[in-house]
Length: 390
Ligand SMILES: Nc1nc2c(ncn2[C@@H]2O[C@H](COP(=O)(O)OP(=O)(O)O)[C@@H](O)[C@H]2O)c(=O)[nH]1
Ligand SMILES: [Mg+2]
Image 1 (cartoon, rainbow, N blue to C red):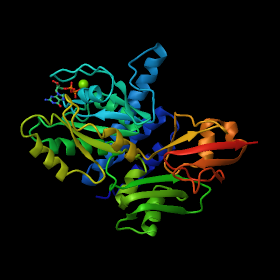
Image 2: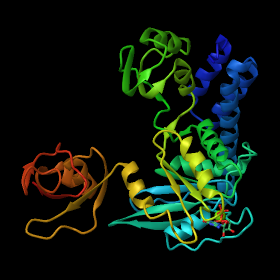
Image 3: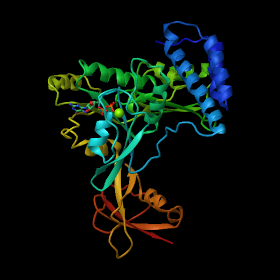
Image 4: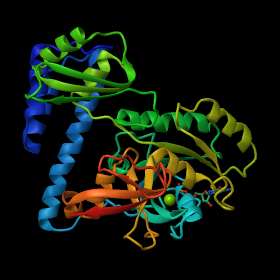
């Protein structure tokens, strides 16, 4: 449903986008909320504005607290190859998953709210480690609760998510859907099919530059796009589109940011009666590109392949560096798919990239062992690289 905003409401949103400080943003959003007409078409936008306002006010509060010193710390420093945040409703078995997969010893109890602060643990997969972070529960029945904001913040900063739902629930398929919907409302997308749009204002571009990656513009043309953006006084911009995207999605994307997070649905308590039938119902309705693991956390059954599944969905490449006439370092560099020899050099040392001459490679991306390549050579998982510099 299109928003059809009156010009003064659009002007307030433009003011919000241009605002530099938190205080200015808060003022612009308050003005927007009093200027926006209240009908079905503006519902999403109003909801977003109210949430954003709550976040900004919290940010302001947090800053004040910081000045006095202290306050709860909920950010968890990343460690290992990637950070995976465990999310789910109360008592779903999140802490038990952390305990089953890592050496961490979280408190596990048959009543809700045992976990008050996030707790990390390391999951070993082959020669790398993933950091799992257990979290306080998400309250799907009270979506606007401030408790949720903190957990959502952790999820937004994560590299991937484990969505934990217990098969002791009567209708876990509905809980999974509500959980995914809850995250979507906050701009965290777990399904590959959902569209993601990024609009970046850029004065150095003449007009609009539209980049479509593995998706489509559904029901609109570049001319429609140009017309919509001009009503927001955006004339020069790069518009990136991934997945299937409508013009309404573009309008939403002007003020909200959607991020894609790879996710695995983990159904726990598979040992309980009736669990198999319930799990089948979840699997039948799962979103595209989101695998489902059916697990019994007490024995670890069903969790054996979580590490491998995470590794595949994160698009990680392990590269082993070596010095001439020496054995490769057993601890790999962790790079993203598509990374080049120069990216590897940069990771080792800034200077090494600057003084780079050539590299020799062994392994999956080498045509023959010890092949000599340039900096733009794309690496594959398991490659061994020997960098030669000036
Ligand atoms: N039968 C069974 N019970 C489980 C399983 N996983 C967790 N539980 C129980 O469910 C309750 C909540 O578990 P907990 O890990 O604390 O859930 P959290 O609140 O989501 O962190 C505890 O009583 C656990 O013993 C499982 O796989 N099977
Ligand atoms: Mg817990």
